[in-house]
Amino acid sequence: MNLLLAEDDALLADALQQQLLNASFKVEWAENGAVAEYLLKKQDFDVAILDLGLPMVDGLTVLKRVREAGRTLPILVLTALDALEHRVAGLQAGADDYLTKPFDFPELEARLHALMRRGRPASQSQQLRRLSLDRTARRASIGGEALELSPREWSLLDLLVSERDRVVTKAQIVEAWGADEGGSIEVYIHRLRKKLEGSGLAVRTVRGLGYLLEASSS
Image 1 (cartoon, rainbow, N blue to C red):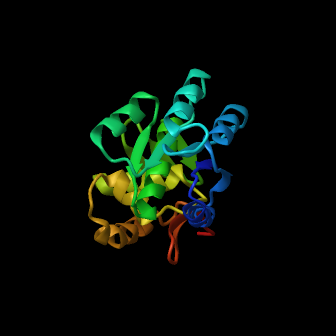
Image 2 (image 1 turned 90 degrees about the vertical axis):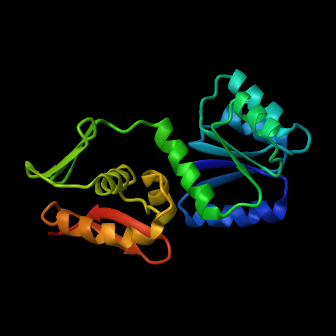
């Protein structure tokens, strides 16, 4: 997943780059607005993080120019300016999301994944090994036999399938559920593992990171 990080604070940028790399992002850093504008217009990124307080060309101007150039990638504005008028200005200029400093990295990561999911709509039907998903009807089956899934189990399965072969963090799961109840995630993972038996898929725990849907031998 290619990401542009436009941030002039070198210490923050370095820390973010390391965390993003650990979260499987390929990061390109722009330390000022001129470089950020050039890269956003000339290269293809899956998502961008754009600080409003950039030197040379401010982030809001970069955002407007990039949108005027027809670039439609998801852009998350990251800034210390938390007044309502700043948030409104950023969104009106073409930002897809807004996060104020200071922030927790799991929230930033969850927002980035949510932006990318919106930017690439999932197919309404999907087949993985013996598992079939019908997103229109919100139904899943294994070898033609329907699975009985609660709303949260469905959301969890849909997220894992959408991000297959990539680690899904607890923050992403909470974001998908739309509720701050991360403490029950392990319970739902356990239930889903049992229901996926015989599908040719398994949910693996990646210690310290999250969960991964991958092919299994069973």
